[in-house]
Length: 202
Image (cartoon, rainbow, N blue to C red):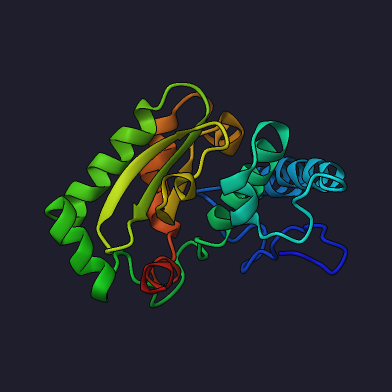
């Protein structure tokens, strides 16, 4: 989200800070959203004046920048997509799997929803160091799973990001310690598939 002076601000959470528990605790949201994301935003805003990127969107900055500006812009974009893809744990009536065009695309490109989840978790658990695992779509709507190191985002590959799991330790260590696979498995319980399907439809 950009304001008139070309500075960025955190996206508003579409749920209460404690709404993702027990999958993600309120304490983790407070640190992850309130501290880590805010630090990336502060660093990006400080670097923008005189950079040539003033007034550009986050996606444009991520596609065109490098170094510190890329690292911070990438993390702001990544975390914005990450935090807005969740819905409260146990929300009544929330679908626990994709529907419509996205569901058909997942079945077409991965064989089944369960096969997709298995591959997605495997690539998330197997990514060395810090980074992100993404479900992304190409211009024709074909889906693929990408592993991105550090602040990487599929937009740099010409893809549209749809769904992401953050595998930086700050995303899960307070709740799961070093058990990254357990964290990844639990995240399916809070995915807002309507949001993800909306990204695919665009």
